Length: 136
Image (cartoon, rainbow, N blue to C red; front, side, top):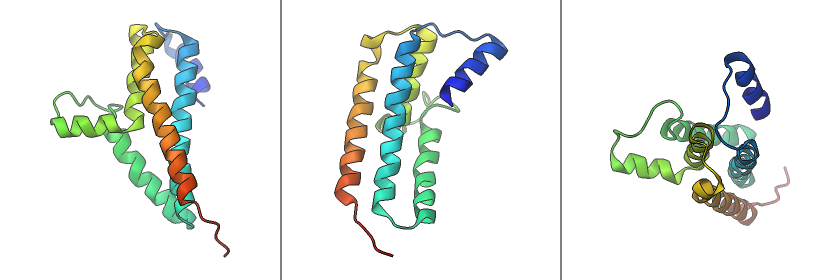
């Protein structure tokens, strides 16, 4: 889906990235893994599909609100900015903007990639630890 959107935007409005396409692909893969691991950790904990969907919505909507996708958090209180930097989507967006708009290289987005790798492993570890086989 990301490739389709990227190609579509490039075709329709002529947008071109200032940075490396390979770096964007790496970021997209690692970001997707982090978000998938979050979903798996929630799904491993609960048996109801409806409950899992609701909890994931409860987690992802504030994440989108606080990540800077819709508006900047520059004028917000420090605790809101701190909370935003704890969320994986903020790191995905910050790194993607740095690569696409500023032409940042791997060295500039390594902290974001490390954070995404750590959250991926943490979510997977929590999901594996909390997983229980349920016989319905």
